[in-house]
Image (cartoon, rainbow, N blue to C red; front, side, top):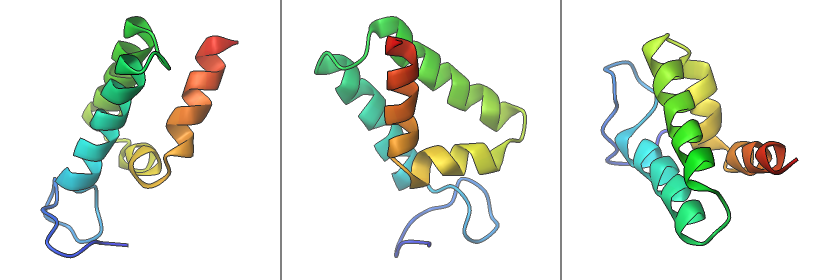
Length: 80
């Protein structure tokens, strides 16, 4: 669902928005700051998202921006 006054990262409707992407990156950084994620895990998550965008995997990035539990699952996998 597109939120009011969001600027899209691309021109098509209902795509990744700056505010959702910013919230995702902020979640990564907060997890590191709060000790939930190591520097390496945080950098890995950011790199993963950047690579997904670069390779055109927008649905994967949307899953991360639309569902916070995706990052939580990533953290659980890193801790295992």
